[in-house]
Structure formats: C-alpha cells, structure tokens
Image (tube, rainbow, N blue to C red; front, side, top):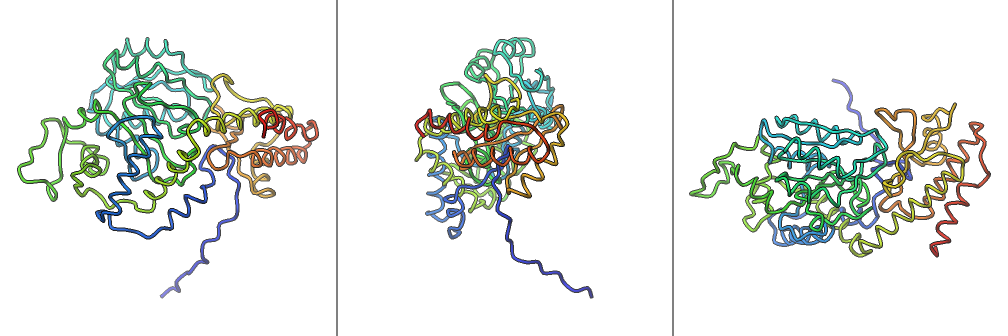
Length: 413
C-alpha cells in the first residue's frame, strides 16, 4: 500500500493582481464569505436571496423582477441565457471585436444556432450603424455582444444597441463581466433585454457566481419552453408546448421558480458565493455607482499618463478604451513574458499577457475594483519601470509615477 500524501495548509503568496482579472478580493467580501452556512430554505437565507435581488437591480440600474444569481463562473450565465432562449436553427448575430465575441459565437453554435458574425480589427469597436445594418440584413432572434472585452481593452458603446434590437424584434444580450460598475450600464435606459456578469473584475469578488438580469420579454420567451423536473413538479402542472431546454442546471425557467416565491428546489445554493455576491453589491452601492465610475475613469487616465510617461505606447482606440484595463505595446526587442515573470517574482505584481492576434505584442494592465486605488497604480508603474531598466530599456527616470501622480493631483487627490 502506498503512503498517503498530506500537503501543507494553504498559504498563497501575496500578490497584487494588476492584470485583466481576476483581481484581489475586497476584504469585506472575504469576511462575508466566512459567515456560517445556512440551509437554503432557512427563512434567514431566503431573505438574503431576496436582498441579493434588490441589490443587483440597483447595480444593473433596472426594475427587472428577474435579477438573481447563476451558480458558476461568467460563462455559466452566458450558457444559461443561450440554452434557454435559442433553439436549433435560430439566427444569432454576434459583433466580434475580441476573444469574448468568439466565445459568444461558440456557445450559440453549441445551442444549434445559425450564427453570423461581423468583425472589426482588434482594438476597434463598431459604429452603431454597422450593427443596425447587420441586424436589418440578418434579422436575428438574438444579438449577443460584450460591453468591454479585456482581450482588446476596448469597450463597445451600447446606448443605441438595445433600441436597434427592439425595432427589429431581436433580443439583446450583453456580457458585461469585464465592465460592470467600472463604467456605466443603465440596463433599462438602454433597453437591453439581458445582461450577465461575474464578480472577479470591477465587483472585486471571487469568480464562481454570475449575476444576471433579464426583462419580462425574455421571461415570456423562456416560459414557452417551461418544464419542471418530475421529482418536484406541482400536482396538475402541464409543461409548455415548446421544446425542453437541453440543460437541467442552466434551465432559466426552473431557476426562475427557484428564485421566485415558489421556491421550487432546483440545486443546493452556493451559500458562501451568495454571501460574496451580496457583499460585492453592497460595497459598490455604498460607494455610489457614479463615484465608482469616476474612480475607474481617473485610474485609467493616470495609468495611460504613466505608461506614456515611460515612453510606452498605449494600444487600441483611446476614445473607447475600457477604464479598468489598459493595453500597452511591448517595446521592441523586449521579451514580454520575461518582464511579466520578473514583475511577479521581484515585486509580487501580476500584469496580463495577451492572445490571439495580439499575442506577444501587448501587455494588459488592470486597475479595477478593490485594486483601483492610487497607490496600486503608482506601485505597478514604478515596478514596471524598474524591470524594464534591468532589460536596458531607456526611459525617463520616474516618468511614469510622476505623470500618473500629476493626474491624481489635478483631481485633488
């Protein structure tokens, strides 16, 4: 018999995570996750569920009744929406401006959709007229796109997209995982049918649970396929005439029953993750949505000024740059992965690599959520300058910190 292996207790090294996400979790969220577990139908716990719905309606700036959590990472919510609304042969339009547009395409294709994509070069976004022209031509059931795509560090303007979709009887779905509360997303004002996110970016929580909101128009579509599993089916229930949703776990209709007053058992709720989601929203709302937007916008200005103060070139369309992630070109002759490795080894700071057509060309540096603070940005810039100097890159001494600090001073900080 082989001897068993017993490992040491967990003791992760300290890191300042200045990449495109995940980020360091707000200590208040970690504290919430340590709270005692409750049974999922304990009245105290169901009240926490109700509070989560109230909190996230405010975060999403919506009155949608159907605003709750999907247990799983960000793409769990994407799949929940798609598998519950898309039937084989349905037309789906995906405007692709980075890696995560391709992800939306693949998930829709796995649902059997007839997917058409429109594309722009990475680093750019679509003019609303391009989207409208495509919607007119394709006449899709669903238009699915991201607000911010961390692979390109740019954000697609969405103010007109929901209205375009509604005029042509298409459902608008937005993955705002990378952008929610880092920039504005008034769901009702912009007439977006469904938005989903996760916690690990600007919400400053851990990955593993996915807030979602959708309107009654989506709910009506889902209920055309309503099915309840036999073991919990109320007496006299008759399933809808539409085809059963292919996934039990991601069946949005059954999740609606779980989160509604019906409280039909569906799965065992991820209790500690619900606590985390509740605290993430509470912290965001305590700061104030606009204050959070302003904090991320100022951090973006400081980061750009700092990188340019080092003589580096920022990637992409600055007009539509995400406020919480900045792409920057790797200097010629520099091993980008070596720089990242030394940043981590010597300073305990993580910055992001890149992939797709940008692989080896840019770094992606984040400042979001709990990490979106002046001292973290200055520390990151100082460390980057030091490591680049060790690799014989010539740059103004202290130019990055000085330029970033000037932006904060100008803002009275």
